[in-house]
Length: 239
Image (cartoon, rainbow, N blue to C red; front, side, top):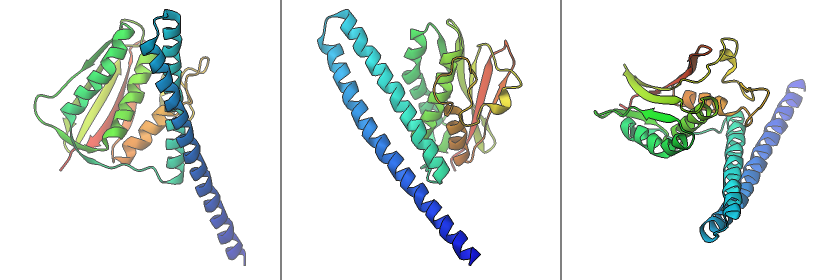
């Protein structure tokens, strides 16, 4: 009898979890649709108005909508991780092309903040097995953190090394560094390095870790105060 009650309770809990995931997905989808409309209207204002203050306000709306969309994506990913429905689709991809894509996408952001983004491409072909969009998301989180914590005129370096049957990527900055006490907590959910002025939900590095692990790789950080920080992650080499 007790076994039957426990089984029924477990079934109800799973059903409740599935309903929660469905509701979260629907809410995220509807909010993304609304944000898309906001962004389209803001861009129309930017393109059509000559009033500088109006253009600036529209640009700020676009940036705020982008931040909201990233938060929605993080929340939805965490829900999928908890539910065991977080999926990746691995395919062979050229690592050099990935690095060039990162340079093109994020280089202008670093220039706007008077910072340097140095990306090491590979002249010889190197193919790794990964989900392209998910790994771009990993780079987005790591480079976004570098933008937050590296001062103006600082440098962020991205490079790759092939090691046996895996490829190791590194994102290194020359910012203030991370204390030894904080390093073990970096990839914890909701944990934030800057507790006095928190930015975001503290989910980015947690999602990075789960994404890399889902690929069969590893992710870790190395740092000393005053000597910058380096984030490393690995992906399997394609057969």
